[in-house]
Image 1 (tube, helix red, strand yellow):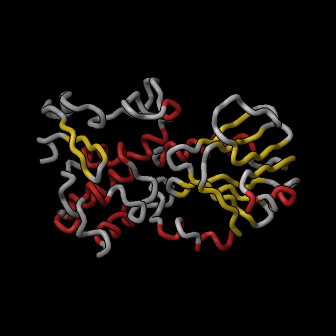
Image 2 (cartoon, one colour; image 1 turned 90 degrees about the vertical axis):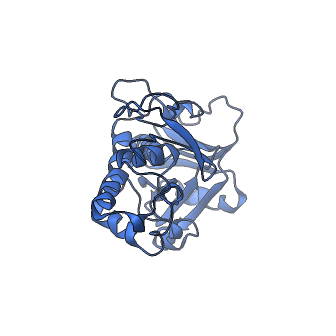
Length: 271
């Protein structure tokens, strides 16, 4: 599943294609959403923003399209309205302007909500702050690490909990813990003030570097459209580097299963 940086980059691409231009056509495959097709013609998409791993497409008529790609959904930009790429996927949503269109394939978690009621959405209402929200500060993350809901949990599990920080994911978890020099078995309540601050900083720094450098290096089992081989791409220190030398101390990186997901760490730096 894509993580916060990949979702935010996807939102950027979609927004660049259609935000600010009147819609010439809207299509929804879901019967419950068909009633919105006529009402969206001529309306303007004001913004496309992520919250965690969900995308929120906000229209100027007070409605917002909620979509979550889960494992198989994918948004695509096409340069010609009415164009439909050859694919075995099922088209779920199409939003067309006179110049370009954005298409959502294969996703099943799609709904229209009144914008002012989004805070009551059953998924969004349970999410923590978005780790890539520019307004999120390390002080807020420190407070959440000390919160009774989170402070007694192992870091290996906590860092995948979207109620703690939305947008975190598996490769981010490994890289954050390595940067903070912490074992996944540690708990926030056992950390010193300096360790807590280092973890809070890493929780902001790693996702933001991944987002800013526009892609991650090639790694096993990761979707090709999230990867890049450019020199500026985000580079893994430990993720997917089992038995390779730690970039700090040369100890062999090890792989563990934590929360049924692969996690990589340096046994010496993170002892």
